[in-house]
Amino acid sequence: MIQLMLVELRLLIRNRSVLLLSTAYLTVLALALFLGTYRFYKDHTDIEKLQLQYQTDIQLWKEKVNHKEAGYPAYYLFNPVSLTPSPWSALFSGERSENFILQRVRALAVHGQIHGTPIRNTEHSMLGSLDVGFVWLYLLPVLIGLLSVTFVANDRRLGRWPLLSTLANSKHLIINRLIVRFALVLSLNLIIFLATVFLLPISLDQVTATIFFLLITYQVFWFVIAGLITFFYLNARQSILSFLFVWIVSVWLLPAVHYNSQLDSKAYNTGIELLVNQRQDMNDSWDRDKKADFDAFLIKYPKWKPKLESSNSSDWSWYFAMQKMSDEKVETLAEQYFNYRTNTHSIWLWLSPTLVMQKAFEDLSNTGAKDYQDYLKQTIEWHKTTQDFWFSYVMLNKKINPESLERIPKFIYKPNNDVLRELFALCLFLFMALIIFTITKKTNS
Image (cartoon, rainbow, N blue to C red; front, top):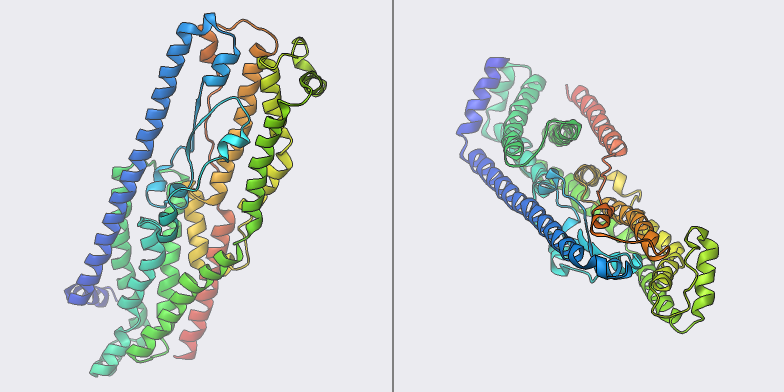
């Protein structure tokens, strides 16, 4: 059996069409890896520039903070907030390019800052970008289909199949030839996988193992589909059309239905209402009874009560109190907005192996919609800590000094790589495909 597989491998690599397909596939993968690596290191450079600008600002304020009220640095100092890229984001860009993952946030109302940004890269949103994930999810099945579904049909057309089937069991022969093609495709993917480990700061951890397992599982699934079609002994045209039908349903039809099911104007309307209400409430506070508003703030937050003289409209304590209160008045809308944006689990998602794989890759690389919403929620929690830091100086008249600026809370993004549901769904797809494959093989024996 091993000798037959070696012979099949020699014949396969001598085939010009196979060499052409393999070279084209590897070239596209290499280009995608190069572009992704460039994006990854550019993101890191942008983050370093943001941090450098922050350190410069800190040094400037250290020189003049002794001569200023604490409200001035609290108002003018911008804190760097960033969704730190995972090395795997170079392979699976997801929605990262469409989101603002680098921001400078002050101690003012947080919702008006993290949500009050224009939509960016609208052309990119429609066209997408070339990355390794796209090649693996959408082009890998095509390569598998072109290499696998027509070899029996071609042998039958050329009259070689009766001779080959007498040399070995026909079922074992088909499986062995599929295994050889599986090894060839896997070797192409391994080249890129190893290049990724070499080019990017990737450690051999659980995430790396999970991504490799997902890739192999996805590849096995499509080879099982190719094997199913092969065992029906269709002609070449019928085999290709059958495989294309499965590919179109999994890769294009179900994803299109899924994305259309997620289009809901409620999310955008809620986001607009959130911004308008927060900013309008802050603007209206200048015309309201300032003392009454600040007293209401102190009733809710009595720990800041020692600062009582707050009727002057220029008082920093009143100003920051109103910023916080305007944020809290739209918290319900903010929660609704997050729910709309993260509610992406429609039934259609779990019917397509391609979509399941895409979601798993994005979750592991922290580039999906949920990851961005988690990043915004973590920004809000960090902002509350930052406000408390400044309020201890602004509200309580605590003396601020240069050393105080070193204690400003720093934002650190904490990723979440939970893909258990996606792993279960993909294994279920593979299990069902293997059952159908076994039944088909016995039926055609």
